[in-house]
Length: 119
Image (cartoon, rainbow, N blue to C red; front, side, top):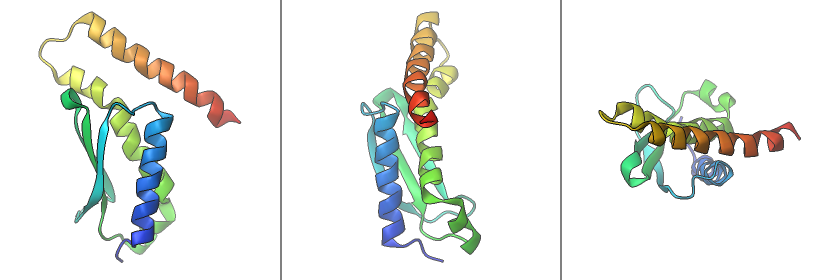
């Protein structure tokens, strides 16, 4: 079944909401649709440039609709949230201070978000 324009717009709004919630406003996001064989959505990042492309599939299986667009957007934004840490792990030379800085950024963000989730 095709992903409707309404579903795509809901996905896009959710991605932007979670981007703000996780303090990822220094990232430039390109949100679109692509044909995918085995995924419902994907996040491609270029951490060095702080740019990301988040896409939702153009078609889903009927049972995929039950999994929720909000959850799907949250999942892809979580990949974005962890992208810098992944990038640092792939670098051949990373300083301890770079790892500490990213670790602290993640901890601060999560400690700001978790109390809101509990309410």
